[in-house]
Image 1 (cartoon, rainbow, N blue to C red):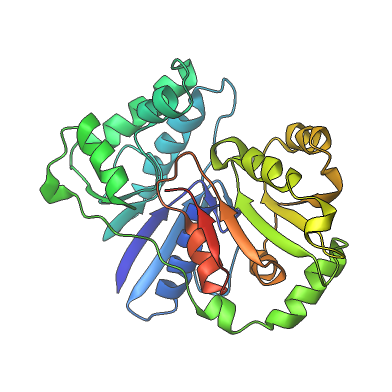
Image 2: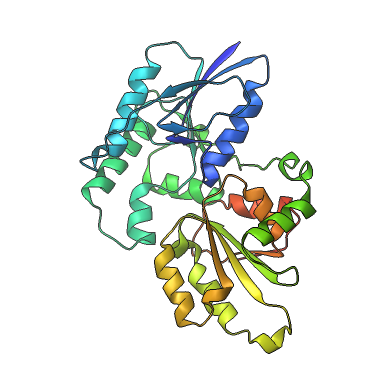
Length: 302
């Protein structure tokens, strides 16, 4: 039996990487040849026989957050022998590292247009230690974009890099009653049967450009669709108050619905008519794959 340690701070909770890791480990743990151990600070148990190890995180001072998680993870993993350590987050030592995002320094400087804080420097330091330490891990970027940025920032040999795109289980959607889900979610949020619903799923409203969608529907007058309204259904976590204020400014506050974080996102896909994600930047859009798996037409940025 192959004994595997899987590392991620939040397991089975909301987020593209979190959902992917949850689905992957649940499937592997159901197979006789694998013994799966999950090391996480927070986790949600599924049906598979997985052994969980809670990893503490020091949240104050803030710069110790990533350092403490990496340190405690490696300490706990060293207590037993594992055939494979597969991390989905920045830690000091691992055999496999699935890289879900670009190097942290690049993210802060280019995408956030900010100077590195002490927290950011600590995050980048842990990242560098993990990628350039000994032994050198096999790095699995989720896209070619991530691979290219990795090579620009670290002296990692291409022989230690293999791009592997995440996937979505079609069974998650094919086994559900789509019509019942549609009625349930629309009734929950006061959406009429005739309304056209644009679904937005994301944890960073700014980068995913929710504001662009709000501005877009403001240009549609009621006369464009008599008796039918175009509404945005927002699933995820972000600066909700700021975007609700924006919706009021554009006069569409009654047509932007914030559903918050949910563990039944599949139902929201079935409740919608279109999926839109006009992101400024995205390393790999898991939500786009989910929308397509649910049969939704998608609108995304190039």
